[in-house]
Amino acid sequence: MRQLIDGARVWDGTGAPPFPGKVLIDGERIAAVAPQAEAVAADGAERIDAAGMFLMPGLVEGHAHLSFVDTPRGTALGELPPEDHALLTMDAARRLLGAGFTSACSAAAAKIRLDVAVRDAINQGMTDGPRLLAASPELTVTGGLGDGRRLHLHQESFGVPVDGPDEMRRMARLCLREGVDTIKLNISGDFGTESAPADVAVMTDEEVAAGVATAHAIGRRAAAHARASASVKRALKHGVDIIYHCDFADEEALDQLEAAKDRVFTGPAIGLVVTRLERLRGDNTPLGRRQLERLKPLYEASCRTHNEMRRRGIRVVVGGDYGFADHPQGGNARDLEHFVKHFGFSASEALQAATRIGGQIMQRGHELGLVRAGCLADLLLVDGDPLNDVRILQDSKRLAFIMKGGVRYVACEGSPHVRRLH
Ligand SMILES: [Zn+2]
Image (cartoon, rainbow, N blue to C red; front, side, top):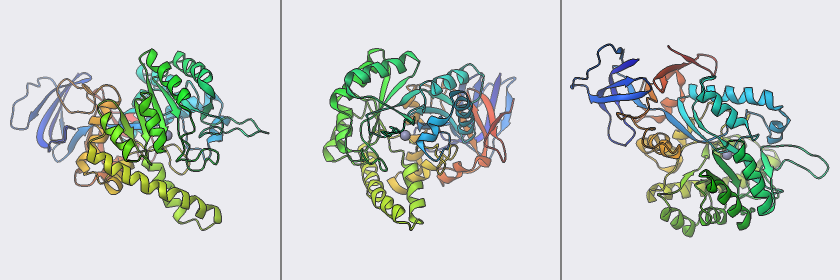
């Protein structure tokens, strides 16, 4: 099946300015991209009149947690039976596609097989959703981020605690056996985790080395939760491929990231931080004020770090820990606004982080994240100009269609779902 998208302003994801043009789709791929004045042989193609619209690559969520299903607490994820949890994860995948995201690189699943099962269901056409790279749960240490247990009370959360290199290797191998693409390691703690603060590297060198080597041994990748400067350096030292957050990275850590910039990806996941800050600013309880005191320095550090990363050309992807009750799935496009407002990105730079760089973190930079002949036809047709205001992408009514592999979808009005157009 051939489709000709005719007359849109085409923004190709490279950072070059948009131009009036035609894009011919043949099956799941882009067959030709041409300026409007040029002829394109499109006999028999369905013509889509896109005059006055903006055509761009589909968005890539670089830090997805599709199985974080908008619960108020991590341990509520542990209470969900796997069957229910899988259906809710499928639902989140449809919502993310409806928000304009045609690809997603998972930054951890809440149970070992959730990303894997949903990735495979999407690939087999059993359900709609973005192209998905599946991650393990957050492999953490006792007392680290994602360990929901108490001495008197066993509770599952979104993490799997492992201590020492042997436990790390065993759990990483198990997750790899079950089909994950990425092993996630919580090297630093986080705000709100008393026994593992955000600016401390709680996972040891030996544990990190074991986790990374286990993934690399069979050609898969390792990703890290790394807010503390020492955790960024530890991740780099042992070859972690994707280093999330990096908020407190000092000069030395930034130099090391810059030296590794052709190898590593980073992603701030600033969305959740901004959402929590907004909520805490209106909270006058002693607990709220204490949390605000802790979160504000982290936010400020993240802004400093990511302005600097942009300056140094370190690859940064969008994606902001969506999937909590106060920060639900589907709002992901707000991250682009955060990049512009808090990190000094131009609209074009933020859009490139969400498209071209996103294609690279999917390990498919040659065929994803660009509007170019030969690439997969993952496209957004937008009513408005995101280069003028990236916030337009937050309104799914402005997405005339979302195309994934040549198939057109629209977001359903009043519900967070997508529907195929043909
Ligand atoms: Zn996360």
